[in-house]
Amino acid sequence: MNLEAIGLILYVILQLVISAVVARNIKTEDDYLLAGRRLGFGLATFTFFATWFGAETCIGAAGSVYERGFSGGYADPFGYGVCLVLMGAIFAIPLWRRKLTTVADLYRVRYSPNVERIAVLLMIPTSVLWAAAQIRAFSEVLGATTKLQFFEAVTAGAIVCITYTSIGGMKADVITDLIQGIMLIIGLLILAGILLFSFEGIHKIMHSIPPNRVDLVGGYESVLAGIEDWAIPICGSITAQELVARVLSIRSPKIARNSAISAGVLYVLVGLIPVGCGLIGAILFPNLSNPEQVLPTLAKHYLPTLPYIVFVGALFSAILSTVDSTLLAAAGLGAHNLIFRIRPDLDDFHKVKITRISVIIFGIIAWIIALKASSVLHLVEDASSFGSCGLFVTFVFGIFSKFGGAKAALCAIVTGFVVWFFGKLTGTISYPYITALAVSAFSYLAVGTIEKWSARRMLNS
Image 1: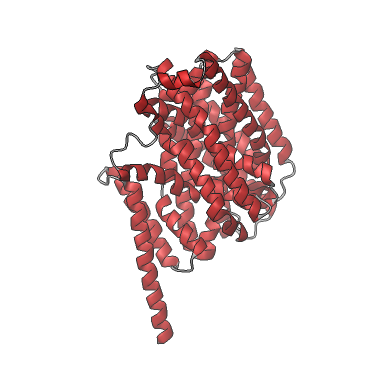
Image 2: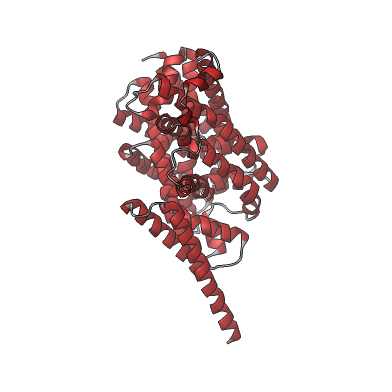
């Protein structure tokens, strides 16, 4: 066993120990899912950043930029960075003031229990797909470090991720997010510094990159194609339980707003490092069979042993800090919004126990998906777009307007999902996501207007 593998194992063990120690104080459902609603600015900023800065940024985005150039980074870091800033600037304060436990609670309180259940059934696959992306990325790094075969690497990654998540809940998550966020920034800065030194500065790097590969909006066949690509990470992630849970875990609305905005800015700045690595990697290693190996390959070739161990630890930090949040989100939605609605008599001990079991179940499903998926980035894009069109429309109306009721919400969610799924499956719709978004908004407005007319008729009669 080489030093890199030993360092990696020790790092994972350290994370598990921290998670176990922090988890001893978990007593209630709020402790497990929302860290007792007591997060301050520092922890909140790093948990936003570390949760969002996952496999798709480090592995997927670097691979996409390796293939497509700078425009391959439209989703990460730029799209998801904008999503975080918008959450802080527009949604964080009104969301926090509602005192929800999960984002699906909004659909019950504002619309109806039936809308809540439909929303949960669409949100859970999103979180599981995102978890699968992290497990897949975990296996990519593990395979590059230990020479494990694909199945062995994915399975080992799944075991670590499921164990890590089921132990600690949100309380352990935010503590380890702070450690992992710092590790991640240090690791990426080390790699960036050594690459700059190897190329004798940023000017030489820029001259080595073909001009057509540094155009952010290049490569789009039309304006609508660009809007489609940018709408998926922004609109598709605003309603994510992983994001909303952090808003609800913070101790004041102003801190929720400021920490989300700060995390979005930090996210883009740090995310430019994997983007740069993708551009450089295409010059140094132009014939990689798997583009998503570009970041581990650069690190392995250019970093000495100790910095390489730190860097690999940073990659695992990015992955672990996201996978625990995604599995926790799926488990929280399934347990809190489905099981506990059927069994409202359960005490906090059994609620936490059931949620932990749910983490394991969804983790196994994510492992199976990770084995079958073609790439990390495709998993993340599917996760962001899956059923989110109608959820986004009803989320916005639900927070900022009293217009529209349960029927309008159900119609918007169902039509949005059907149009997106049909377009994705058949390929007959050029821009399935924004088409589904438009159809969903129209459905909500149309049915909401009918509901309003019906209510007036009943009053007049």
